[in-house]
Image (cartoon, rainbow, N blue to C red; front, side):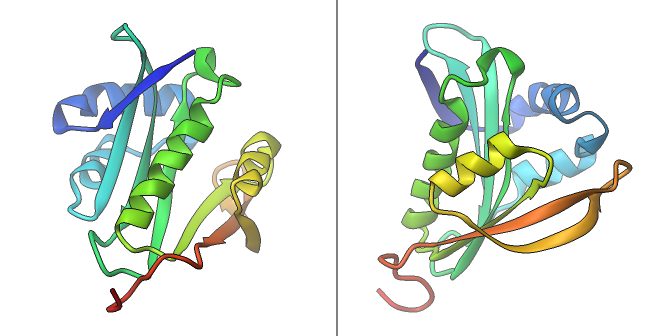
Length: 161
C-alpha cells in the first residue's frame, strides 16, 4: 500500500486525539498534551493517509530545534491496526529522520516499550541502539522503557555549517 504524508495542522488535532486513545489506550497522551505538542514551534508532526483516499492511517512526531540543534527526540510513531505490517511505521520513521537531518540533528533519541519487540526491531534496523532502560516507566502497567539513540555522523549540528 502507498501512503501520502503531510505536515500535521491544528485542524488535524481532533482526529489525532481520537486515534491516540485508540492506539495507545491508557498510555495515550491527554488531549491537552497533544495540542501543546503539535503546536510547539520545535515540533514536526506528520499525518499519513492511504493514497487516493481520506482514510487516516497514522501519524508521527519529532521534537528538535528548527536548525543548529545537536539532539532531537522522536516523540511518537503511531499506525492504526489496519495499516500495520505494511511499511507505514518505517515510512514515518524515515520521514522524521530526514527532517532531523534537515535540521542538523546528529543524535536522535526515542523511548519504546520494552514489551514491543516489533517496534524495537524496526528502530534497530534503522540504526538505533539501546542506551538505557527506565524501569516501570509506562504506567499503570509498570512496563520498562528502552531509551534508544541513533547518531548520524555526517550531519553537522550545533554552530557548524
